[in-house]
Length: 428
Image (cartoon, one colour):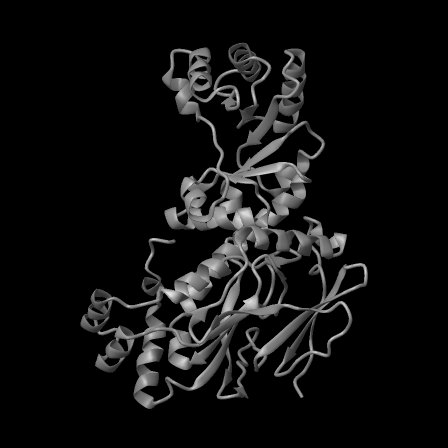
């Protein structure tokens, strides 16, 4: 569980609206908010829902402490009436949305929050901070998994992110298909398998490379990974096999022209009899770099900066908009930011073969169900209480199946239309 108190993520303007709504009597009006994106990041053909499991826990625990309320009162952020309301805050509404691991597209209503206006609006920053981050990481990671073509991926970007974001990023990357993380907090918190090896500092600490390798093998055995590019890679490989023998599990290369070096390293390993020793490469890899190594003798990829920062798209571009008040659809008409009013229901349509063909969104109603349609929304919170959610491994498998279902063009790394079209059926 996160050490971050969720109430600390409330934004000033949210509490401004709460204070005013409490004073004018509109705070308890039944409202519906939806989370969606108007567009996918440039070059992307799908988004990936991630973070829902984390979010449900944070909503459950969303409380304002005495110290927090005193701070808000003392600094004039809220008046006395709002301070009293915050002191007893507990979300009592409903949350539903797309499952973790589901794909989404422009307009997809991936999360719906309903309840009194005040209790819903105060969650806006929390909801968006979790989903915008985790969805961005998961989408980038899913593209890397596709590019890796079945080869193993290790998430190793903790040093390129905020300490809490690093744990969330490891979770999102695992959801997307990464097999390991180097982040031990993520391993403890979410049960994600962990992996790692020594850094260049360990080699530099010792009088020579052989001494460093000998120490690591003596401590961890031959089922370890030796980093061979601190000095000369060819000599590093020779030293590694001389110390550990041909049973060494893996070597890691973190620099240079990886395509050329991977080929040369494989040849040298085979020459030394280490035919089963695997090659792990790392060093600012993104989905394009991974794809460029598809024909090379690489066994595993270590991705860091690119995956934890969304590989050029650090936010999923999600927004949290009011679409219904007291059963009446409401719309925002701002130029380029217009919304579609009313609570929405979405289905994914498929061919009999299982290939997805279309996403259909119906405001204020239930879509006309056809054979092979799949309803996309499910309940997460009912009357303020979380319902049982799929496990992280089940969500991981759900995403794998979703990626199999979209047309192969939707998996391309090049820019283009969304993987499947989205149709919004007018209300009425």
